[in-house]
Length: 301
Length: 255
Image 1 (tube, one colour):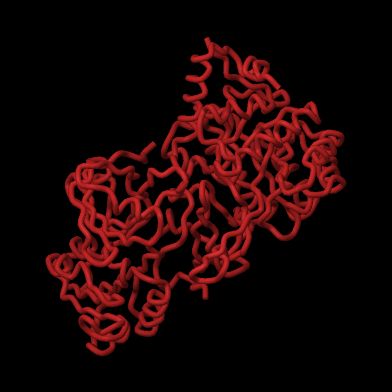
Image 2 (spheres, rainbow over the protein chains, first blue to last red):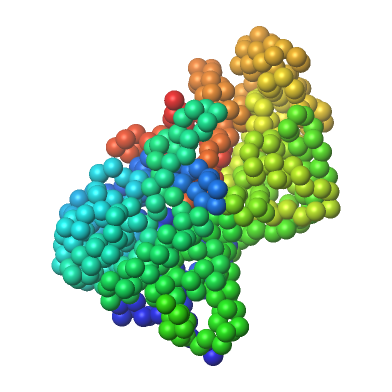
């Protein structure tokens, strides 16, 4: 009997498959597959007040990947708690809410409000490349990342996952800084900052000019960073970046991830999270792995 | 779980104008899911083209749907190479389409690759209807609109066929009047028509196009500004889910 369960800072996920923030909507993704199949649902970023997001075009396809510059459009935490959370909580899976902010106070306000709900964990987004104020600014400096972690940790009654950006010189420095201030887990990587130019129109494709690069094209960068962070800190890691198949999940687990998030794959195939989970099971059956820990230990470094 | 991505069988596939293809796809579930003004997502098989291509539904049959699409990039180029008998990865219908209103006289205004969804709309409208369709230089779907009972007026930029000019100029030139407008086409055309209809105090439903990510409402990549009583005076609505069809009077047009 295969045991897919994962212990993320005391929260037990039935399996390691979660949905990457920004690529999942309970109502809309749930039209294609049974959400109970997920280890956890990670929501789109929610801020203290509604955010309008960026102008369009917000999406550009690239070779084996895509760019987005949605800019964390969201209805704000009060609306989320009242209208979206009850729907998500009806499912037999964990709910992780991605928290966005432009200031430390913003993050804290959302964390405090969510602490009074029955969400399971918070993922603190200090790494969105699409918002000018805050966001990525917090994720690219160790001191700022540490400060956000420290303040949110103080007010949050839920375990906090800090989402790390790859757009830094040394991701392990940031990881160590947030671990030192009480982060319960980390997730990586957020999107890489990218750009596409339409040479016929002679202008950037995205209205925001630059955007977050995701999809299978970025997977080697993500695997490398998970590998590095695993060796730098002791916290649980949610690995993500370009996962398209069950074998990609195995790759992240071997690099050191405890759980994973599936994002862009759900655009190419709406049922990707479930299909990937089944492929992971098939891989484990093929090599007679009973637990994810066995996969991790089987890796020859 | 009411939506899915299925394999559809291509039963007809022809080039009806330069780089414009008509594809008839057989799949009962997809056909049963569709209503006029909605679209389907077509999924390329090439691994490096990740995103689905949203294509408006031109006609809905018992077991088939008809799509008319333009070849504009790698994905649609791949679709154009598909032969009759092959299968295509297709979603069940998505989006909020046209709401046909049987008024006295409906005016259907289409531009280029925006013309296709007007065919199913024309079929479903039982009232008197006029179609005003514009192209760069090569018209298509004229016969289909006539078969659906519409009186068809054609404009081309080049003057190669019909009236030389755009659809708004043609409407004015011919004195075309109606008490309800529907439209799909390039943004500049939709904006001009929405302004025209506002001035005449006639309602218009417009079908918008925007670059999409997932094509089913999850990513919030494709949005348009719709008037709302928020601080900014608008809200970003999802073109793939809340639309693609909106009331012309509620859309705030980006420059």
